[in-house]
Length: 374
Picture (cartoon, rainbow, N blue to C red):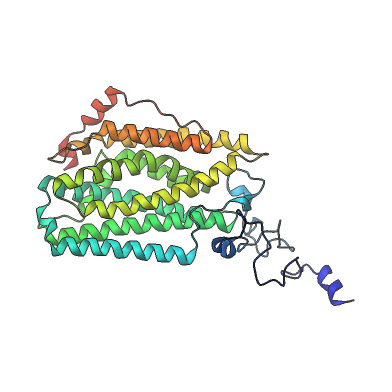
């Protein structure tokens, strides 16, 4: 038997000779654009697939026979999972570089603020907000990060895994950013309680619906349900509402110019994560075979997690009344959040329109006493 015949008859991994296999460029996949990007060269088909190149099927499997990676780990279906390419084109090296840049930026902000004695000039009512409520919100970020850390393991391709994994990494880094930042602020302000945020997260009525929404995301068993609920539901309705609609709008009027700089890193993270999520779910809804079934499933997920997120958002309303100098309103912030999630829904192809803020809901949320927030 000739070497060529031996190779053709073998089922060993890597035995098959593919067109262009002797080329010095990666040309075994179809790039999204005219030419393959560096991201595609180092990401596409890094994770093997029996439908493409793994001739002998999965090399290992779980004890119950489940293969190393299974399409059954999500209710969503796709004719070609390998068609997804993350718009942010992020892979290991570029991710580490960006994370390092963000950490350096935040360190500079903190050092400059402390050098100038900025924390001592924060309004006292605002210091309580940082201690109690920004300190509580870091637990939401951590919870979402751990949910996504689990979810990334189940993606069927490396491109899907990378997008969810970098999302998790950004969330966990930001939770740590807030922890370290508040510790720095606390070291310059007497009586700052670093444990207050956790106490409010666990017991304050303002935060309990938010905690419930995060726990429902963590409890979901479908990894794409978790990815969907984080980026297309919770983030625009609760995460951005608190970060951009409250902290970044109000902080400067309280003589705090450093906290918005720290928070801005998370807003930039979300723009990247959102672009990746929209690309993936729009691809799934355009699928010629499974698109309509996928749309039905996403609509069901939106109904469930959207209801929890709206409840969480409404319960945060008393926070807008806590700063001494009031420069933003909850109603305006919530309206922007509604518009944001509706626009995201239109972009992927689902109905994400939510009812306008009912006046009775404002009154009910406002009835949560300031004492519960202190």
